[in-house]
Amino acid sequence: VLPQDLPTREALRNKLPALLAQEFPEVRGRVKLLANGPPVAFPVQFRVIGTDPLVLRERADEVKAVMRTSPNTRGVNDNWNESIKVMRLEVDQAKARALGVTSQSIAQAAKTILVGSVVGQYREGDKLIDIVLRQPQDERNAITDIANAYLPTASGKSIPLTQIAKPVFTWEPGVMWRESRDYAITVQSDIVEGLQGATVTNELLPQLKRLEAQWAQAGQSAYHIVVAGAVAESAKGSSSIVAGVPVMLFITFTLLMLQLHSFSRAVLVFLTGPLGIAGVAGALLLLNRPFGFVALLGVIALMGMIQRNSVILIDQIEQDRARGVLAWEAIVGAATRRLRPIVLTAAAAVLAMIPLSRSVFWGPMAVAIMGGLIVATVLTLLALPAMYAAWFRVTPSSR
Image 1 (cartoon, rainbow, N blue to C red):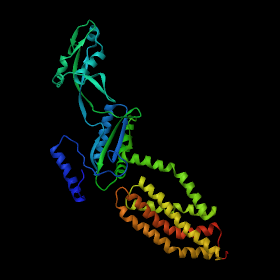
Image 2: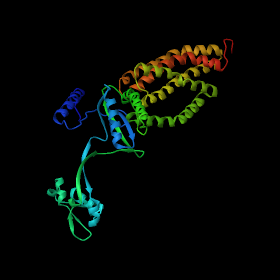
Image 3: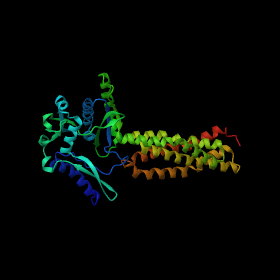
Image 4: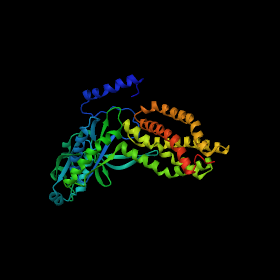
């Protein structure tokens, strides 16, 4: 649905759930905006894995009960859905053997009546169309029509299908998912507006781990819970970034060497990269933002900003020393003269991130950059001159 403007969208978004519940109570309806982040069905997902489908269904119901206790979840469900009514044929094997009828022929006859059997293919141009043999529409509308089916026997005669098989109705899962050869039920839910799936997942995870421990104490250690959904997909994305970090660090250090023409100075600049980590952690904790995939991107970008300021400061020190200024005075003078440009560029970057910080998806990245850059700017202006003086053994009397 594409509304004309935001007020119309929000009005429609608030109206549709009540309309669906009133007009279509048998339907599980969802109204959601285009998702931010990895393309997953639900923002919060936990996968319950086990060996017995009946026991697994009970364990999944316990997980759903825990998720429903959270005020931040909406519409808790699972991907096995509700059980469906199916028909099974209980075959009297003694009669079947006496009449020379196999279980395969019984299954084939039932399939032909109710669903149809493919007996050939018809080619039309470059397409192959299945030729399906089945009963006419008016003879397969009801399950009772199976009584009209006849089976060939070894003697050449035909007998009614119901003479050797009895239809039995039972309830079974409509779909059964597996993971690593075990049965797996994904329990999932939507979340309230303004939160991220990672935040709600981390709130629920301790309770679910305690539930998993209770299963293990009861002798059901084969059943366990794993995190799925947006959190799992984000972890995959983070892993792909981490895999490229060594190459990134090597290229960065090489460029610093080319810029500064010194291994020692390149190491000094390189060591200033992590100075903003304290600010990142503090800002994320203060504003209650998760450290996920986008926050990791922010940290990587932040390291480049910090090292840029360090290059500017060290380059100014080297220029002053090249003009004959004493080493100690060059350090103090460079830090003083570069204070305003570095602070202004950092302030501009921080202010530019304020609108982005309100975004649910990009907010953690903006918060990480803002907090890290504020702390790193102060530490760069204070710590880097001290590190330079200590590294090159510069004293007030040095030349």
